[in-house]
Length: 136
Ligand SMILES: [Zn+2]
Ligand SMILES: [Zn+2]
Figure 1 (spheres, rainbow, N blue to C red):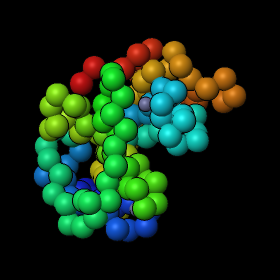
Figure 2 (cartoon, helix red, strand yellow):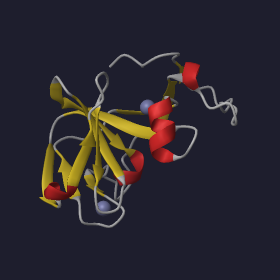
Figure 3 (cartoon, rainbow, N blue to C red):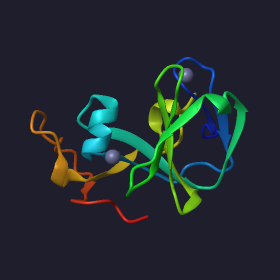
Figure 4 (tube, helix red, strand yellow):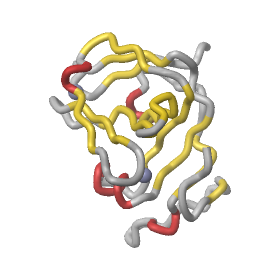
């Protein structure tokens, strides 16, 4: 089966396609992801490419912290959809939950484990671990 390149938010108003399949996926344990998701870690997949919007682009909002990636979400339902490098918009990370089908990759690393939630142990799953960001 072809990997899915079709993505949407929870309410379905934001829809977009990826110009290329994602190449790698991982869990992020940073405190920003914890705050934004309400969970201990968030799964995203990376690609170098672009997004083609099918609908709802006007509903997107972003959190642009002083350092780190722009965090884009649907302002109607709050779903995270993607983040991107502010200096190079082709460097994208797509939330795994945004895919409408199977993205074709499985998480292979955990990053920002130095900031992991105190209330949930990091799973002993053999995935490579990075204390800070995993280099791209
Ligand atoms: Zn939405
Ligand atoms: Zn994170």
